[in-house]
Length: 126
Length: 138
Image (cartoon, rainbow over all chains, first blue to last red; front, side, top):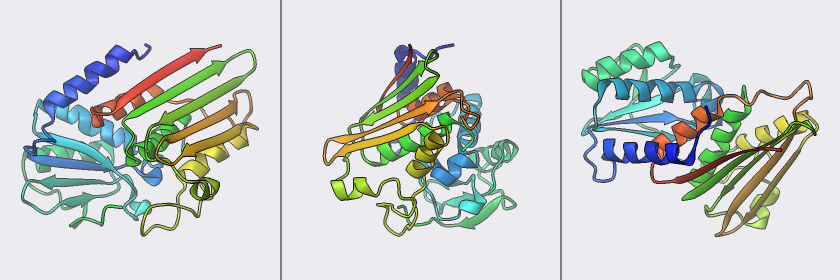
């Protein structure tokens, strides 16, 4: 199936209505690291997995975004999950299954999945 | 990088970080000549001549605190591996264009990959950026 310009407009419109990033009402922020190293290790599939989890859950106050290389290329694919008012948690060596668990336990349930977490805190954004 | 769609994702991430609001991604397939061209054009902040000269150097980056920048060099290498060409042009304050030409029949040619997925993801994560995707068959 070919991708038409109308399809892209639809995606953009749908996302504008579901994420409330601009007015700052997002409850959770997911940042998938999409530097060259991240993309080469499969960050696109990780981002896809997060998006399909969000779609399934039908939640509207989760913001998903990307960032560049965090300087830990050997532990990619990585993602940072940040609940409003709490320090960010960095997850490393992600797979689709890990994403599903993180989504269920941390993003929906509010409990950090310690096995997959590298650290609590965030690198300087470059 | 496994395929060209991932390279495109990587290059477009550069455009986004350069503050682009309109990004054109064009893929031209020429079966008769055995060519595949990829053009990515943005209206980001662009680069000056000095930066442009070093852009394919893997040990050059404009990001503070980093020493290497592999994205563009890897894309250029992927094209050169097939005997293709790589061109990048930029004007400070205007934007940047990347044109890459591959020889599709070369044994080292990478697969195109899931380009639709790449575009969908970009549009989903960046709803405020205008992506213009075109596929042309010659």
